[in-house]
Image (tube, rainbow over all chains, first blue to last red; front, side):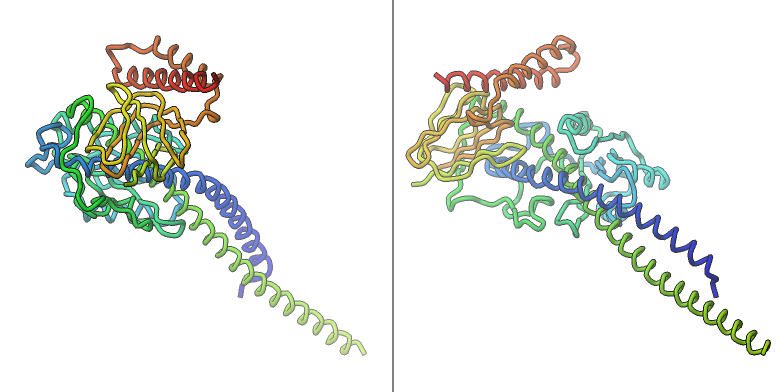
Length: 297
Length: 137
Protein backbone atom coordinates (compact mmCIF):
# COMPACT_ATOMS: atom_id res chain seq x y z
CA UNK A 1 0.00 0.00 0.00
CA UNK A 2 1.19 3.44 -0.89
CA UNK A 3 2.26 5.54 2.01
CA UNK A 4 0.92 8.94 2.97
CA UNK A 5 3.70 11.01 1.53
CA UNK A 6 3.48 9.32 -1.88
CA UNK A 7 -0.19 10.02 -2.13
CA UNK A 8 0.25 13.62 -1.07
CA UNK A 9 2.85 14.08 -3.77
CA UNK A 10 0.59 12.58 -6.38
CA UNK A 11 -2.34 14.78 -5.39
CA UNK A 12 -0.12 17.81 -5.75
CA UNK A 13 1.08 16.86 -9.21
CA UNK A 14 -2.39 16.03 -10.47
CA UNK A 15 -3.59 19.38 -9.12
CA UNK A 16 -0.90 21.14 -11.09
CA UNK A 17 -1.87 19.30 -14.26
CA UNK A 18 -5.50 20.22 -13.73
CA UNK A 19 -4.54 23.85 -13.35
CA UNK A 20 -2.63 23.83 -16.62
CA UNK A 21 -5.32 22.03 -18.60
CA UNK A 22 -7.90 24.38 -17.19
CA UNK A 23 -5.91 27.41 -18.30
CA UNK A 24 -5.54 25.87 -21.77
CA UNK A 25 -9.25 25.19 -21.85
CA UNK A 26 -10.04 28.82 -21.13
CA UNK A 27 -7.64 30.07 -23.78
CA UNK A 28 -9.06 27.65 -26.34
CA UNK A 29 -12.61 28.67 -25.45
CA UNK A 30 -11.85 32.32 -26.11
CA UNK A 31 -10.17 31.55 -29.42
CA UNK A 32 -12.89 29.10 -30.32
CA UNK A 33 -15.59 31.74 -30.19
CA UNK A 34 -13.73 33.98 -32.60
CA UNK A 35 -12.78 31.19 -34.97
CA UNK A 36 -16.30 29.79 -35.04
CA UNK A 37 -17.79 33.19 -35.78
CA UNK A 38 -15.37 33.67 -38.62
CA UNK A 39 -16.02 30.26 -40.12
CA UNK A 40 -19.78 30.64 -39.91
CA UNK A 41 -19.76 34.17 -41.28
CA UNK A 42 -17.74 33.12 -44.31
CA UNK A 43 -20.03 30.25 -45.22
CA UNK A 44 -22.72 32.41 -46.74
CA UNK A 45 -20.32 34.07 -49.16
CA UNK A 46 -18.69 30.80 -50.17
CA UNK A 47 -22.11 29.26 -50.67
CA UNK A 48 -23.45 32.10 -52.80
CA UNK A 49 -20.29 32.08 -54.87
CA UNK A 50 -20.74 28.36 -55.49
CA UNK A 51 -24.39 28.98 -56.30
CA UNK A 52 -23.49 31.55 -58.94
CA UNK A 53 -20.98 29.17 -60.52
CA UNK A 54 -23.58 26.44 -60.45
CA UNK A 55 -26.16 28.65 -62.15
CA UNK A 56 -23.89 29.70 -64.97
CA UNK A 57 -22.25 26.31 -65.50
CA UNK A 58 -24.23 25.56 -68.65
CA UNK A 59 -22.98 28.70 -70.32
CA UNK A 60 -19.42 27.49 -70.41
CA UNK A 61 -17.56 24.55 -71.77
CA UNK A 62 -14.47 23.15 -70.14
CA UNK A 63 -12.29 24.93 -72.66
CA UNK A 64 -13.43 28.44 -71.82
CA UNK A 65 -11.04 28.80 -68.90
CA UNK A 66 -7.89 26.99 -67.89
CA UNK A 67 -9.16 26.37 -64.36
CA UNK A 68 -12.16 24.42 -65.68
CA UNK A 69 -10.15 22.04 -67.80
CA UNK A 70 -10.52 18.38 -66.88
CA UNK A 71 -7.40 16.36 -67.55
CA UNK A 72 -6.82 12.70 -68.14
CA UNK A 73 -3.91 11.92 -65.84
CA UNK A 74 -4.13 11.43 -62.12
CA UNK A 75 -1.25 13.39 -60.75
CA UNK A 76 -2.77 14.75 -57.61
CA UNK A 77 -1.86 17.63 -55.35
CA UNK A 78 -3.43 17.83 -51.92
CA UNK A 79 -3.54 20.86 -49.68
CA UNK A 80 -3.61 19.53 -46.15
CA UNK A 81 -4.78 21.83 -43.38
CA UNK A 82 -3.81 20.49 -39.96
CA UNK A 83 -3.08 22.19 -36.67
CA UNK A 84 0.15 23.80 -35.54
CA UNK A 85 -0.07 22.55 -32.01
CA UNK A 86 -1.14 19.32 -30.44
CA UNK A 87 -3.37 18.63 -27.44
CA UNK A 88 -6.47 19.01 -29.53
CA UNK A 89 -8.04 15.59 -29.44
CA UNK A 90 -8.19 13.27 -32.41
CA UNK A 91 -8.72 15.74 -35.26
CA UNK A 92 -5.29 15.35 -36.82
CA UNK A 93 -5.34 11.57 -36.66
CA UNK A 94 -8.83 11.49 -38.12
CA UNK A 95 -7.75 13.74 -40.96
CA UNK A 96 -4.71 11.59 -41.62
CA UNK A 97 -6.86 8.47 -41.79
CA UNK A 98 -9.29 10.12 -44.18
CA UNK A 99 -6.39 11.31 -46.32
CA UNK A 100 -5.06 7.80 -46.65
CA UNK A 101 -8.46 6.59 -47.82
CA UNK A 102 -9.26 9.38 -50.23
CA UNK A 103 -6.04 10.24 -51.98
CA UNK A 104 -3.83 8.24 -54.27
CA UNK A 105 -0.65 6.90 -52.62
CA UNK A 106 1.69 8.88 -54.88
CA UNK A 107 -0.06 12.21 -54.44
CA UNK A 108 2.03 15.24 -53.58
CA UNK A 109 1.20 17.53 -50.70
CA UNK A 110 1.13 21.17 -49.68
CA UNK A 111 0.77 21.56 -45.96
CA UNK A 112 -0.61 24.20 -43.65
CA UNK A 113 0.01 23.40 -40.01
CA UNK A 114 2.92 21.64 -38.41
CA UNK A 115 1.32 18.46 -37.10
CA UNK A 116 0.55 16.61 -40.29
CA UNK A 117 3.68 17.97 -41.92
CA UNK A 118 5.93 16.27 -39.40
CA UNK A 119 3.78 13.17 -39.53
CA UNK A 120 4.04 13.16 -43.30
CA UNK A 121 7.77 13.65 -43.23
CA UNK A 122 8.12 10.56 -41.08
CA UNK A 123 6.01 8.55 -43.50
CA UNK A 124 8.12 9.84 -46.38
CA UNK A 125 5.39 11.47 -48.45
CA UNK A 126 6.34 14.20 -50.87
CA UNK A 127 5.67 17.69 -49.57
CA UNK A 128 6.31 20.38 -52.14
CA UNK A 129 5.46 23.41 -50.04
CA UNK A 130 4.54 24.42 -46.54
CA UNK A 131 2.68 27.52 -45.41
CA UNK A 132 2.02 28.96 -41.99
CA UNK A 133 -1.13 30.89 -41.29
CA UNK A 134 -1.62 33.15 -38.32
CA UNK A 135 -4.50 32.97 -35.91
CA UNK A 136 -7.21 34.26 -36.47
CA UNK A 137 -6.94 33.51 -40.18
CA UNK A 138 -6.25 36.65 -42.22
CA UNK A 139 -7.39 36.55 -45.84
CA UNK A 140 -4.11 38.12 -46.92
CA UNK A 141 -2.21 35.03 -45.76
CA UNK A 142 -4.40 32.51 -47.53
CA UNK A 143 -4.16 34.32 -50.86
CA UNK A 144 -0.57 33.21 -51.53
CA UNK A 145 -1.57 29.60 -50.85
CA UNK A 146 -4.41 29.76 -53.36
CA UNK A 147 -2.08 31.46 -55.80
CA UNK A 148 0.54 28.77 -55.39
CA UNK A 149 -1.76 25.82 -55.97
CA UNK A 150 -3.49 27.55 -58.86
CA UNK A 151 -0.10 28.11 -60.44
CA UNK A 152 0.86 24.46 -59.97
CA UNK A 153 -2.33 23.45 -61.72
CA UNK A 154 -1.93 25.94 -64.55
CA UNK A 155 1.67 24.91 -65.13
CA UNK A 156 0.35 21.44 -65.78
CA UNK A 157 2.32 19.91 -62.93
CA UNK A 158 -0.83 18.29 -61.57
CA UNK A 159 -4.14 17.15 -63.01
CA UNK A 160 -6.19 17.56 -59.89
CA UNK A 161 -5.96 19.61 -56.72
CA UNK A 162 -7.83 18.59 -53.60
CA UNK A 163 -8.04 20.18 -50.23
CA UNK A 164 -8.15 18.21 -46.99
CA UNK A 165 -9.36 19.90 -43.84
CA UNK A 166 -11.51 19.34 -40.81
CA UNK A 167 -14.90 20.88 -41.30
CA UNK A 168 -16.64 22.40 -38.37
CA UNK A 169 -20.04 20.96 -37.45
CA UNK A 170 -20.43 22.10 -33.88
CA UNK A 171 -18.31 22.41 -30.80
CA UNK A 172 -18.47 18.69 -30.13
CA UNK A 173 -18.24 17.44 -33.69
CA UNK A 174 -15.71 18.00 -36.44
CA UNK A 175 -15.54 16.00 -39.64
CA UNK A 176 -12.46 15.39 -41.75
CA UNK A 177 -13.15 16.21 -45.40
CA UNK A 178 -11.34 15.87 -48.70
CA UNK A 179 -12.85 17.93 -51.52
CA UNK A 180 -11.76 18.62 -55.07
CA UNK A 181 -10.75 22.22 -55.65
CA UNK A 182 -9.38 22.18 -59.18
CA UNK A 183 -10.47 21.73 -61.88
CA UNK A 184 -13.57 23.64 -60.88
CA UNK A 185 -16.50 21.43 -61.71
CA UNK A 186 -20.02 22.68 -62.10
CA UNK A 187 -21.63 21.56 -58.88
CA UNK A 188 -24.17 18.85 -59.39
CA UNK A 189 -27.71 19.57 -58.34
CA UNK A 190 -28.22 19.17 -54.62
CA UNK A 191 -24.72 17.85 -54.20
CA UNK A 192 -23.52 18.76 -50.74
CA UNK A 193 -20.55 21.01 -50.49
CA UNK A 194 -18.44 19.71 -47.67
CA UNK A 195 -18.47 22.57 -45.21
CA UNK A 196 -21.65 24.19 -46.38
CA UNK A 197 -23.85 21.19 -45.83
CA UNK A 198 -22.77 19.59 -42.62
CA UNK A 199 -24.99 20.45 -39.73
CA UNK A 200 -26.46 23.38 -41.59
CA UNK A 201 -28.55 21.75 -44.27
CA UNK A 202 -27.00 23.94 -46.95
CA UNK A 203 -26.70 22.69 -50.44
CA UNK A 204 -26.56 24.17 -53.87
CA UNK A 205 -29.99 24.03 -55.40
CA UNK A 206 -31.76 24.71 -58.60
CA UNK A 207 -33.69 27.85 -57.78
CA UNK A 208 -37.08 28.48 -59.38
CA UNK A 209 -38.84 25.95 -61.57
CA UNK A 210 -37.41 27.20 -64.81
CA UNK A 211 -33.72 27.96 -64.34
CA UNK A 212 -32.20 30.58 -66.55
CA UNK A 213 -30.36 28.96 -69.40
CA UNK A 214 -28.79 31.90 -71.14
CA UNK A 215 -27.05 34.45 -69.05
CA UNK A 216 -25.89 37.74 -70.40
CA UNK A 217 -22.39 38.65 -69.30
CA UNK A 218 -21.08 42.10 -68.70
CA UNK A 219 -18.57 43.26 -69.76
CA UNK A 220 -18.12 39.87 -71.51
CA UNK A 221 -18.09 36.18 -70.58
CA UNK A 222 -14.37 35.59 -70.59
CA UNK A 223 -13.68 38.62 -68.41
CA UNK A 224 -16.32 37.63 -65.91
CA UNK A 225 -14.92 34.10 -65.75
CA UNK A 226 -11.36 35.32 -65.50
CA UNK A 227 -12.29 37.28 -62.41
CA UNK A 228 -14.80 34.98 -60.75
CA UNK A 229 -12.83 31.73 -60.93
CA UNK A 230 -9.69 32.89 -59.09
CA UNK A 231 -11.97 34.57 -56.56
CA UNK A 232 -13.71 31.24 -56.06
CA UNK A 233 -10.41 29.43 -55.49
CA UNK A 234 -9.25 32.13 -53.06
CA UNK A 235 -12.40 31.90 -51.02
CA UNK A 236 -12.55 28.13 -51.02
CA UNK A 237 -9.05 28.02 -49.58
CA UNK A 238 -9.78 30.77 -47.09
CA UNK A 239 -13.00 29.14 -45.98
CA UNK A 240 -11.41 25.70 -45.62
CA UNK A 241 -8.65 27.11 -43.44
CA UNK A 242 -11.12 29.08 -41.34
CA UNK A 243 -13.19 25.94 -40.86
CA UNK A 244 -10.10 23.99 -39.87
CA UNK A 245 -9.21 26.64 -37.30
CA UNK A 246 -12.68 26.64 -35.80
CA UNK A 247 -12.47 22.85 -35.56
CA UNK A 248 -9.04 22.96 -34.00
CA UNK A 249 -10.01 25.33 -31.22
CA UNK A 250 -13.27 23.52 -30.56
CA UNK A 251 -11.50 20.17 -30.38
CA UNK A 252 -8.85 21.57 -28.09
CA UNK A 253 -11.42 23.15 -25.81
CA UNK A 254 -13.27 19.85 -25.51
CA UNK A 255 -10.10 17.81 -25.02
CA UNK A 256 -8.84 20.13 -22.32
CA UNK A 257 -12.19 20.15 -20.57
CA UNK A 258 -12.15 16.36 -20.50
CA UNK A 259 -8.60 16.42 -19.14
CA UNK A 260 -9.54 18.87 -16.39
CA UNK A 261 -12.57 16.81 -15.42
CA UNK A 262 -10.51 13.65 -15.30
CA UNK A 263 -7.90 15.27 -13.14
CA UNK A 264 -10.55 16.51 -10.75
CA UNK A 265 -12.06 13.06 -10.48
CA UNK A 266 -8.65 11.60 -9.84
CA UNK A 267 -7.92 14.14 -7.12
CA UNK A 268 -11.16 13.19 -5.41
CA UNK A 269 -10.25 9.50 -5.43
CA UNK A 270 -6.75 10.15 -4.20
CA UNK A 271 -7.98 12.42 -1.42
CA UNK A 272 -10.38 9.71 -0.28
CA UNK A 273 -7.61 7.17 -0.16
CA UNK A 274 -5.33 9.62 1.59
CA UNK A 275 -7.90 10.30 4.28
CA UNK A 276 -8.54 6.59 4.79
CA UNK A 277 -4.86 5.99 5.29
CA UNK A 278 -4.52 8.96 7.59
CA UNK A 279 -7.43 7.75 9.69
CA UNK A 280 -5.88 4.28 9.80
CA UNK A 281 -2.59 5.73 10.94
CA UNK A 282 -4.26 7.74 13.69
CA UNK A 283 -6.20 4.74 14.91
CA UNK A 284 -3.05 2.65 14.98
CA UNK A 285 -1.24 5.34 16.91
CA UNK A 286 -4.04 5.63 19.48
CA UNK A 287 -4.04 1.87 19.90
CA UNK A 288 -0.33 1.93 20.55
CA UNK A 289 -0.68 4.65 23.16
CA UNK A 290 -3.51 2.88 25.00
CA UNK A 291 -1.65 -0.43 24.96
CA UNK A 292 1.43 1.30 26.29
CA UNK A 293 -0.64 2.88 29.07
CA UNK A 294 -2.20 -0.48 29.93
CA UNK A 295 1.22 -2.03 30.14
CA UNK A 296 2.45 0.71 32.51
CA UNK A 297 -0.37 0.16 35.00
CA UNK B 1 -43.71 39.25 -59.06
CA UNK B 2 -41.21 39.53 -56.26
CA UNK B 3 -37.54 40.24 -56.63
CA UNK B 4 -35.34 38.82 -53.93
CA UNK B 5 -32.14 40.67 -53.16
CA UNK B 6 -29.18 39.14 -51.33
CA UNK B 7 -26.15 41.26 -50.49
CA UNK B 8 -23.32 39.15 -49.15
CA UNK B 9 -19.80 40.05 -48.07
CA UNK B 10 -17.18 37.62 -46.75
CA UNK B 11 -17.88 38.89 -43.23
CA UNK B 12 -21.62 38.58 -43.22
CA UNK B 13 -24.90 38.63 -45.02
CA UNK B 14 -25.78 42.32 -45.20
CA UNK B 15 -29.25 42.18 -46.66
CA UNK B 16 -31.74 39.54 -47.69
CA UNK B 17 -35.32 40.46 -48.48
CA UNK B 18 -37.81 41.13 -51.23
CA UNK B 19 -37.38 44.48 -52.97
CA UNK B 20 -39.09 46.34 -55.81
CA UNK B 21 -36.03 47.34 -57.78
CA UNK B 22 -32.23 47.40 -57.56
CA UNK B 23 -29.66 49.71 -59.12
CA UNK B 24 -26.19 48.25 -59.45
CA UNK B 25 -22.88 49.94 -60.28
CA UNK B 26 -21.99 47.59 -63.14
CA UNK B 27 -18.61 47.49 -64.84
CA UNK B 28 -20.12 49.19 -67.91
CA UNK B 29 -22.16 51.73 -65.98
CA UNK B 30 -25.13 51.76 -63.67
CA UNK B 31 -27.90 49.32 -64.38
CA UNK B 32 -31.43 49.11 -63.04
CA UNK B 33 -32.91 45.71 -62.30
CA UNK B 34 -36.63 45.12 -62.12
CA UNK B 35 -38.42 41.82 -61.58
CA UNK B 36 -38.44 39.53 -64.65
CA UNK B 37 -35.04 40.76 -65.73
CA UNK B 38 -33.20 38.48 -68.12
CA UNK B 39 -30.47 36.27 -66.69
CA UNK B 40 -27.31 38.28 -66.23
CA UNK B 41 -23.95 38.03 -64.58
CA UNK B 42 -22.01 41.22 -64.25
CA UNK B 43 -18.84 42.45 -62.67
CA UNK B 44 -19.39 45.30 -60.24
CA UNK B 45 -17.14 48.25 -59.68
CA UNK B 46 -17.00 50.17 -56.42
CA UNK B 47 -19.89 52.58 -56.24
CA UNK B 48 -23.40 53.14 -55.04
CA UNK B 49 -26.09 50.51 -54.84
CA UNK B 50 -29.74 51.49 -54.44
CA UNK B 51 -32.84 49.48 -53.86
CA UNK B 52 -36.50 50.18 -53.18
CA UNK B 53 -37.54 48.36 -50.05
CA UNK B 54 -41.02 48.81 -48.54
CA UNK B 55 -41.50 52.03 -50.47
CA UNK B 56 -38.22 53.50 -49.25
CA UNK B 57 -35.06 53.98 -51.26
CA UNK B 58 -32.07 52.55 -49.42
CA UNK B 59 -28.53 53.37 -50.46
CA UNK B 60 -25.27 51.62 -49.83
CA UNK B 61 -21.65 51.96 -50.87
CA UNK B 62 -20.26 48.70 -52.20
CA UNK B 63 -16.84 47.48 -53.25
CA UNK B 64 -15.98 45.48 -56.33
CA UNK B 65 -17.52 42.09 -56.89
CA UNK B 66 -20.23 40.36 -58.85
CA UNK B 67 -23.94 40.25 -59.23
CA UNK B 68 -26.02 37.44 -60.58
CA UNK B 69 -29.49 38.34 -61.79
CA UNK B 70 -32.27 35.89 -62.52
CA UNK B 71 -35.93 36.66 -63.05
CA UNK B 72 -36.74 36.48 -59.38
CA UNK B 73 -33.44 36.96 -57.64
CA UNK B 74 -30.42 39.23 -57.43
CA UNK B 75 -27.30 38.01 -55.65
CA UNK B 76 -24.68 40.65 -54.95
CA UNK B 77 -21.27 39.36 -53.93
CA UNK B 78 -18.93 42.11 -52.90
CA UNK B 79 -15.98 42.65 -50.62
CA UNK B 80 -17.58 45.66 -48.92
CA UNK B 81 -21.10 46.95 -48.33
CA UNK B 82 -21.58 49.92 -46.03
CA UNK B 83 -24.49 52.10 -45.17
CA UNK B 84 -24.01 55.85 -44.81
CA UNK B 85 -23.65 55.68 -41.03
CA UNK B 86 -20.95 53.01 -41.18
CA UNK B 87 -18.54 54.98 -43.30
CA UNK B 88 -15.91 56.89 -41.42
CA UNK B 89 -14.30 59.55 -43.56
CA UNK B 90 -11.07 59.62 -41.64
CA UNK B 91 -10.58 55.85 -41.80
CA UNK B 92 -11.39 55.79 -45.50
CA UNK B 93 -8.95 58.61 -46.22
CA UNK B 94 -6.26 56.87 -44.22
CA UNK B 95 -6.88 53.62 -46.07
CA UNK B 96 -6.40 55.40 -49.37
CA UNK B 97 -3.22 57.02 -48.18
CA UNK B 98 -1.76 53.79 -46.83
CA UNK B 99 -2.57 51.88 -50.01
CA UNK B 100 -1.05 54.63 -52.17
CA UNK B 101 2.14 54.61 -50.14
CA UNK B 102 2.37 50.85 -50.43
CA UNK B 103 1.71 51.05 -54.14
CA UNK B 104 4.79 53.24 -54.51
CA UNK B 105 6.92 50.55 -52.94
CA UNK B 106 5.66 47.62 -55.00
CA UNK B 107 7.33 46.73 -58.26
CA UNK B 108 4.53 46.98 -60.78
CA UNK B 109 5.94 44.41 -63.10
CA UNK B 110 6.80 42.01 -60.31
CA UNK B 111 3.63 41.55 -58.37
CA UNK B 112 0.60 42.24 -60.52
CA UNK B 113 -1.76 40.73 -58.00
CA UNK B 114 -0.59 42.93 -55.17
CA UNK B 115 -0.91 45.99 -57.36
CA UNK B 116 -4.43 45.02 -58.36
CA UNK B 117 -5.30 44.45 -54.72
CA UNK B 118 -3.99 47.86 -53.64
CA UNK B 119 -5.74 49.60 -56.50
CA UNK B 120 -8.88 47.81 -55.39
CA UNK B 121 -8.48 49.18 -51.88
CA UNK B 122 -8.07 52.70 -53.23
CA UNK B 123 -11.07 52.66 -55.54
CA UNK B 124 -13.17 51.00 -52.88
CA UNK B 125 -12.38 53.58 -50.22
CA UNK B 126 -12.75 56.39 -52.73
CA UNK B 127 -16.22 55.13 -53.60
CA UNK B 128 -17.14 54.98 -49.93
CA UNK B 129 -15.91 58.55 -49.41
CA UNK B 130 -17.73 59.84 -52.47
CA UNK B 131 -20.89 58.15 -51.30
CA UNK B 132 -20.65 59.64 -47.83
CA UNK B 133 -20.12 63.14 -49.16
CA UNK B 134 -22.94 63.07 -51.69
CA UNK B 135 -25.23 61.70 -49.05
CA UNK B 136 -24.69 64.69 -46.81
CA UNK B 137 -25.67 67.25 -49.38
